[in-house]
Image 1 (cartoon, helix red, strand yellow):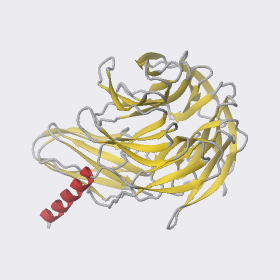
Image 2: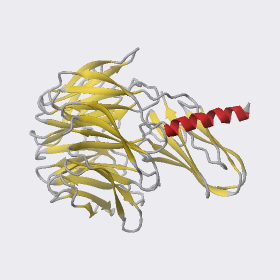
Image 3: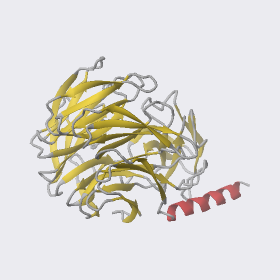
Image 4: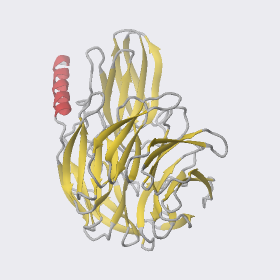
Length: 475
């Protein structure tokens, strides 16, 4: 029976590794939203279903669509704010620590970044709170605990002021914000992301600047206020528009993905070192690429890239075909006029990642249902000849167990990553003797309060082998 189980698992693994393309079913969420320019996926009402938030540039509107599950999802539209001029970007997170998901927005013509406090109720009531009212040509906004003090801070990008700034949360309500400049003279600043790029335990920043054609990162030097050292990664990434931090090659160093109107899509491999060396890797030279994210879309345990391309009116994927430099196979998902905003999440709770995009010229929001067939077993675990990993139960609610056998004495690490390659938890780092082991990840002792429902990687490494498996956390 045991041999039969592993034979079936091996066959399923093989099918999943070599069948890279994923089919998608297109669904319309909204066909009359005037100029969608920003999209984000999050469970706004804490009901266990991922909702959609969008910013309408031409309508000056922030809205969210409630996910009402059934045989097919229906979407109930809720207006957050109808007077937010040139609403260009949106984001969602718990800003004030009350366990309710709030919404953030950037208004390009309004020169404003703001957040809307989730006051609860059904429908949810929102209280607008301005973060910065003279943030000229505000372009992007996101939440991140920059100083790692337990309060959610804000990162903002001003295209008109050519700056990237962070706004320090004082931990009170209403929140008072202290503005700190990270990057100045960053011509035509468009995008920002955060992560520990140099592996020293604090939060670094990466940015994209359209007018100076730059991808740049700032090293966090510590201090109060934090001091930043600027490093230009690339100054010839023409009309640079979007930056995203992710471990694209899954080597435990965070890399940088860039999207540019005239240079297409590239990523920069983080080769480590006291002064990081960045190795340029081209993905595609397509023009008018707008937004790209790195995520495992086909569940083959490597990181793919999803992309919106405004000039070519399309939403597409670059499937990661592996090897040292990574080869990418193009796959068209849909033709969508003025394809611009893009995000992702498991909208139908079936264990795979769906895609959401908006057509600026079509005034339409669509979601693309990932038709990848999944099961609740370990079919995508890549086991080596000498090392096996069994994860159970999958999906899990309260805890998941990682069972493995060591044939030889070895130093063992077990790490949890999200589906963008971001490290979530170092679960085990120790030398172990040969034998059978079982390690548990659960909500009570080592999961962390920031872990939400969704898909994750478990990576088990010894001195000679590496095994990666997908796990799914559900409510």
